[in-house]
Amino acid sequence: MDPTPSVSYARRLGSWDAAMIVVGGVIGSGIFLTPAAIARQTGSAAELLAAWAVGGAIALIGALCYAELGTRRPQAGGGYVYLREAFGLVVAFVFGWNLLVVNHSGALAAVATVFVQYAGAAFGVTVDNPGPWAVATIVFLAGVNWFGIRAGSLVQNILTVLKLAAIAALIAIGLSLGGAPAPSAPAPALNPLAFGGALMPVLFSYGGWYYVNDIAGEVRDPQRTLPRALIFGMLLVAACYLLTNLAYLAVLGHDGLAASSAPAADLMRRAFGEPGARLIAAGIAISTLGFCNISMIGAARVFQVMGADGVFFRSAGRLHPRWRSPNVALLLLAAWACALALTGTFDQLLNYSTVGDWLGMAAVIATLFWYRRMHAAEPSAFRTPWYPLLPLAFLAVVLWVVAVTIWNHPRDAGMGALITAAGLPVYFFWRRFAAR
Image (cartoon, rainbow, N blue to C red; front, side):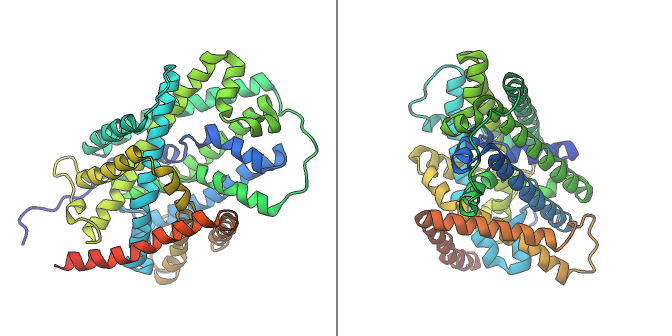
């Protein structure tokens, strides 16, 4: 018997910390860049705003479902834990495999690279080789989070408040500068296929609320805190996104937004010239750094639970005896993300993972039906309203958007399916390895 006492997570985060993790996990660089791509896939300002409104509603439904799941199982690991209990370890591992190989690690590498580029732009410097600087960013954040959840959440709170301030300034300047959305040509009839294609990047921009469930084992009074943080956080994000798009439309119009490669910079450039563009570049840098931080916090907890389950390195399953951080999992995650950043392979990997990412989220939502059936008598501090209509609506929209994405990008979807399938032999290898 191991004489060393087991170390568990400490519940140190309150409602404000959890809400900032929700907001910080959703808002990265997407709202500063993605609206231009959405404008190119929509026929009018009304259709563009409808896409962001629908995406926000779907994300809020997902957050409501995660709120119930989190109150039922308030422990580290989030979706991995729910899938393990509902559908078995092999399904949970494939979900975690995608997070490890592509989704979380690839997003961390990609957004760290974006942070470096925008930080350079804020200082008027062109970064020709952002890879080493992205590695330094990842290593720095891993060092911060080595000292536990309080250190990581303190950094997160500061960065999230700063990013919200940057978005508020962008909205205020855009609406005051433009006044009202610029007139455009009559809108063409709605094309459901094109609208579904536009929803995927919208949903991608709204993704990330689930990070707070990954750290549920470190949230105080999770039965009350998690639902409050998820609902408040997603409503705040949706309001920010809709108002930011209104600001873009007020200044650039739908056609100008569609023609822009960097709408936030174009808006600020019209208001204040190049200093304005550099100012918003600083805001984007802050926002992306905050996303990197919460991505590292959440992902490391998932991999720690996988290690404890014996389907990842056993050492990754242990916590630091003093700081109660998943320090080995942090190092492994940071090492893989650094490798992706240096090789520049993350962009293509993220393209491959988009479909799998949302299918994984749909699978997690589907566990709610299992919990309701198998644990009907189990008390739950929060229950998803209008069950089962809302979870079914979430699944229907996600499957529709995924089908449209597969139709439009069959090669990327096929590669994503291969990456997912590769997780099965790895699972059986780990199970055999752990049994020795």
